[in-house]
Length: 605
Image 1 (spheres, rainbow, N blue to C red):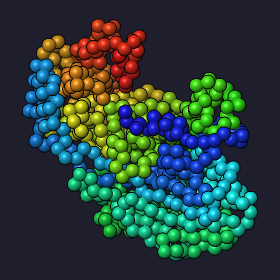
Image 2 (cartoon, rainbow, N blue to C red):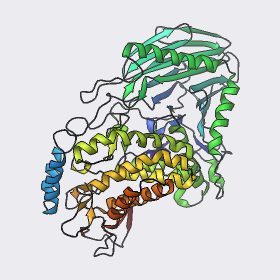
Image 3 (cartoon, one colour):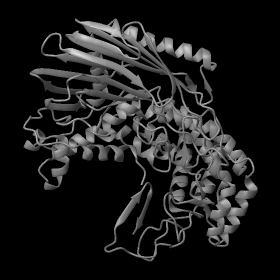
Image 4 (cartoon, rainbow, N blue to C red):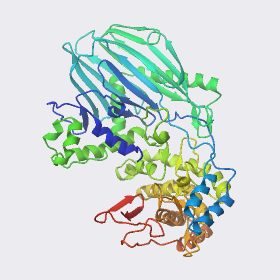
């Protein structure tokens, strides 16, 4: 199964390693642990929808792993197969009509992308803070207050109480880390930046580090996205000096680290400028962001961030009771949940999902990818891309129903991009109008079929348009509907053109296609999968409603009505199940009938 965004962080909650602590957790919206993170999955995520970090909470060597939502490998490209097209499509359809599914799967290799099967979401780098003598500590507590979007680590060394506060500002667009102690002159550390990318590190002045990096090539596509990281340290008391590759703070009462991350990405087709000029531009912008933040008091930076975050978070309050279990570390609570004595963990988990969406999907940024915003790997699982046969949609299911409508904006923007980039794929591969999206895309909005025969699933656009229609139903905003209607119309035009009359039943179906992540007798392709029937019927129906509301496209409304009326109905199989395919290919029951819900499909297994 994929490391999906919400599922991934469910594992994150479970994976924390901790011993029992008597410290009471009086904030019901707090995730907390009494040991530092040993692996990346145990660190605490912070983000402002554009930049993010995983905070490890390690006393002797604090670690913040850094990401920017626009930092991806490769360069703009298209991945439709120029050597395939409608003739190959007809060949596959004939094989499916003849029941030669294995041959259809094999021939589909001629239809999927020849070379590029998507690029990879990249890590920017790592911030390390080295504290000599802090290997032996006690009373450690690291926490994530999801009511404020602030991570805090506290611990004691030699009778001194240390506090580290980290947040990714929604207002000032930087990551801020404040280091304090309850005794003067006790803040001593070295700050360093590292990266897995091709990069140049510069120590600028006594208190600043500048890292410039470029993303790697991918499948022959040169890396063109550049990133600039600027780190500046402001100390209160003591001294700050530069080393060969570090910033060293000695005997300070406190220190604040300002960290900005900027890329040269402009849109899915182009970067800011040529590589030399864009590096200069983004480095200057990163420096300026930090200078602007430093003109404000730390308290104002923190309060403004919390206020901006709570504008979203405080819209929903969910309370089903609280017990003494809330006094335990979060990982202990998760392990004990089966005992049924911790109802508040349910509301915490619910709000944690909202926290993640606020933190990784903000207006003007990129949509939440397979791991949201947080990724440490240059070759992450499934590229940490956008898998739109379930994952991308699943990330945004909470957006409207949990009062986070603004977080939907990056997905809306992505759909508008895809409605343009998908036109060439529709025309060249299917000979169709409109636009098409197969099961995967990335920051460059590629829309061709990838991976294998199972990638020949052309219904991604229909599912994403379902999100657009439902967003309209929540807000009733005709201006929004008008803005997204071209994407809905284009997706519908594609299916009006490619719906295919099944010779065995006479129904209109999508062929070839697949039921995502499933197979029949080991084969992927078929005609008229239930998921497609439902998604396309819904798309046509919703587009008809949208056109009627906007009073446009009367002739096209009629064409959609005719196509929708001819589509295959749902089928009930021999086990009284809703079939996953037109053919009744479910071969056995496992124990009592259990319904498996996958997207819009329900079947008995």
